Image (cartoon, rainbow, N blue to C red; front, side):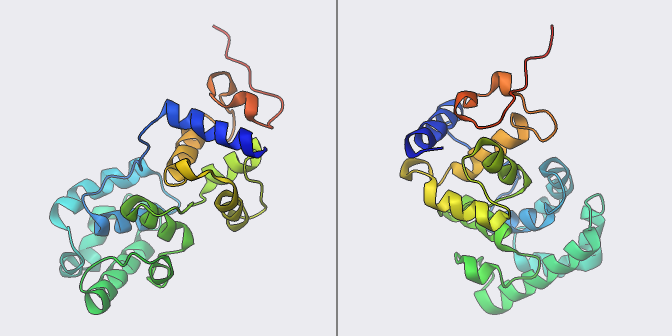
Length: 214
């Protein structure tokens, strides 16, 4: 996909969804961080169901520490890997209180030092909370990047580097959300819905999936 096609690719996604945002529910940056940590290998829908009651009770790291690991587990036990995630959330909350005055640092390198926070999680927080031009490559974005020819790579980091290089200026902050939503709802893993895709003619994927028979 050349430079002009890449610009048109994002222009159409932006026209179709002018204000893309994460589907995780949160009230502040700390809650966003917790939600993203909990979302690893889980769906946003599942995380939202588990955190609605939790986030009414917990809005800051110290409150999470006071709730405790066992108390947190009771809220998130429907989420996969909840035991390990609870341990990480309590540990990162303690670090935030001890080292950062309870605030979430706006620094990707610092974020990745927190328990349970990898590069993808840090990129989501930097983008959604601080408006940084970061590209969090999950399974959806990895698939869309490779399938369309927009950003090919054998690893998530390779795809991320391609996106950093290729995404045009006007679309850099929203690109992560456009791509993940496109992968989640249109460019699906098993059967991409090419017949209703706004960028189908720019996509390298062959053959295109036909519209279902009426």
